[in-house]
Length: 243
Image (cartoon, rainbow, N blue to C red; front, side, top):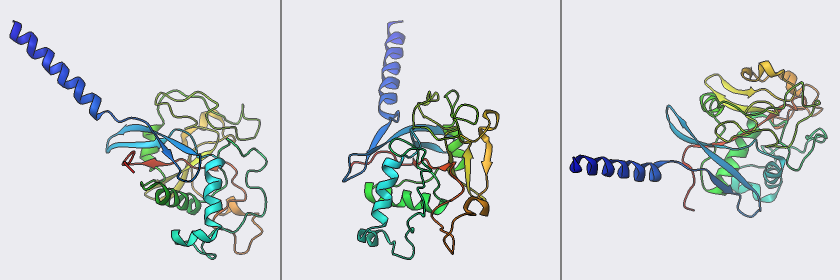
């Protein structure tokens, strides 16, 4: 009897130790050379663990990327005056707000370039989530800025309740780029979406109309003049590095 009890205790201790070591934890990705960070949250999926940004990427971080690719240092990232983004013809934040607000109106190319830049700068690989990863992170609960409560504008990140994984604005505020077998799509819904259409119910295919009023010829592959509802969120499949 005493032997069996001791064995049970030992098994429980080993299980506890194992879970303490193996359980993935959130981490904060610093952006070298700046005071800005991106909080990353672990998500268990069918294909393994990945980390997703706790919030949509705000202008505070995205503007650092824009400053970099429009500077002479951009050559180290393989971007030149031809492939780099031309300055937007108008304020791309639409007057909604800059500090603390989600970055908007970037194309899929710009979103991918942002993750390439962040990966280079941080020394760890970041990507746009797949549609499956996005759906796995879209857990129960959480508030949303949508058509009926947003007053037709974006709102600062993390101002509604997070979902059960501690992730903010998975639905509403701005739609988010994802990778699908059929190419990039925007999912989740935005401040322009009725609440019943949020989440996977709002899976949008990019169309020319999203950039119809861009006066540049050819039209910019970086900015979406008519898609103020499009933003981005990032994932990592490796987690925090030792660098």
